[in-house]
Image (cartoon, rainbow, N blue to C red; front, side):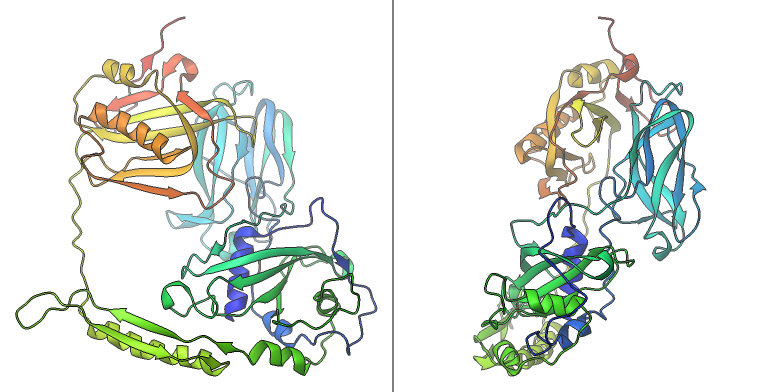
Amino acid sequence: MKAADQAACKWFGEYGGALAGVGTALAVTPEPISTKIGLGLVLANAAAQTGCNYDPSKGGELGRIDGCSAIVGGYGQLYAKWGGNDWQIQSVLYQGKLCSIDNIDEYPSKFNGQWGYRGQFYSTEDGSGTDCELGNRVHVALDNSEAAVQDAVFKLVPVQGECDKAEQPGIQPPDIADEPYTDPDNGCQLNVKFLGYAEGPAGSLYQITQMDPVLEGRASGGVIGGCNFNSSIVVNNIGGGGNGGSEPPYVFPNPDNPPPSPNPEEPWWVPYVKTALGGVVAGITEEVIESFFNKNYPGLIYRMVSVCEKDAEGEPISEQVEVPIPEMPAPDAQLARLDAIVELLQAHKNFKQPVCPNERPKLEGDWRTISFRSTQSSPYGKSCIRKRFRYRSMSGIGLGELVDHWKDFTWTTGPVIVTHRGHSWGTPQVWAATADEGKRVIQHAAREAGFNANQVGEWGISDSASSRYGVSLPVKVDTTGGYYWITARDGSDGRPIVAQTPNL
């Protein structure tokens, strides 16, 4: 797969858009434009053979629910459909009777040898459906093949009561980040610009974007990688026309000096997109090829520096290997960069490699499990969000003192992931509104555990890569059922002891 096609597949897999409340930018008529005017899409048709199959109608918070997702006045049974099979009943480990599902993962995951999906499942203890609040995030196993479950969808079938909320998988609204998209495999970055929508034959829908590497011709850090391509126009099918959004993208060059548009009121690329979607392949004009390929690339130096070399007396020294590349036109510039890889790899082989010892502290202490519940419903559903926080403690205090430490504590959830590692209490993690808020939660736990988290171990801060996660809401200790959902236990067997809340 070509670099531009790889980048398009990865980007559309994360930021795929759709025709949702937005008019089409253009329509492909039965009569294609003149082949003399239209850009021949030899490159585009080659890119169409990449095998990039992205379907934005699958995935997302409710994108994998096809039918009832919540039941009122009762409960239901979970069903799933995948791989061209009919609906099949599924068993789920949860408390009580299942009454609501949401937040099904966009992509499948493997657990205990089986591929399936994780989702949020809510149940009611008595099956009345009036207290659908007991929530767990559970993996539903479907098949031993990842490919077989790519099109899986779920629904609830009422056993008692009626369906209160029905969902239908549909194309998602555009979700294009303002900041550059970072390739998860090699770290190179893309600037992505949304250009519009197109309607093709038989009602097929396409999203049009312009994709440009942030660093032209090479990935960040001087390593040639998956973003080693020029500015490109990407036309990606997003549904309709009987192909379900599975058609590979058209990718063609965005030249420095694009040819004039036959219609001054239209962007230059409109007739080319019409040609591509109309199924016409014409010859590429010499002017376009020249402007795209016959350009000079600036000179640069690839440098690899050692970190473990020593001189004859055993003192640390630094050695380096440099591969200078002068300013050259394409394709010589690309070939020189590819040839540089061989010399840099050999230098990497010759240098001594650093080895980091795997020193982990011994885990000690009793488990503490604190369950929190938001004080208001999630903006993406009717239910409150729930957070569970776990850590080990060597304090030795009883359950009553533990409850007193936590019962009045409140904090605000969010997209910032804060962890603490390198200490005997494990690696506690919090999704909070800010880094300081997450540290405040963990420091509160550390005080009960008997140490200062700023003086022992180290902090880790990261952000969620998806806008669908990290809802920001205030939370407090869960008291559902008249108990503080705070547990302290010596072992893993038996039901944990909980403290009853005072009668107010």
